[in-house]
Image (cartoon, rainbow, N blue to C red; front, side, top):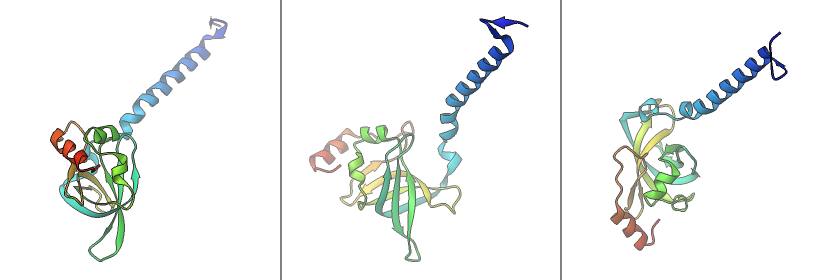
Amino acid sequence: MREMNGAPLGAVVVALGAVVVTLAAVVAAPLVAHHAFGAEFDRNAPIRLQGRIVRLEWVNPHTWIHLEIENEDGASEVWAVEGGTPNVLLRRGLRRDCLQPGTEIIVDGYQAKDHSLRRANGRDVTFTDGSKIFLGSSGTGAPYDEDLIRARRERGRC
């Protein structure tokens, strides 16, 4: 029987194989979890949602704003709106404390491909003072306007 450092060669091969499979799974998991816009959202279904924030998830790889809106029947429903990463939003001048529960906003974006879901990808968020920030992911031609951020700060706005 062949041995390697006192262990049977077959056991060494199995252990090495397990390490390789585990590493491959760890590396591949984030790639599978992340998605392209077109995989989940419908660019032909623009949507405008206006309401109050009920919850905020300031997490990677996407932020999520949960917004309570009044639908066409007058009933309330909560929509989950996907935004860019927290880091990207911070660089655009949007801080977590700007999106507190109870804050009224308007979100322009695109509905999920499965229209039965109350989920959207946010393009812009507009505050009641009329200021607007691009909510989408970076690398898509996102506007980055230093003058807009400076003006918001001067007005004491998030």
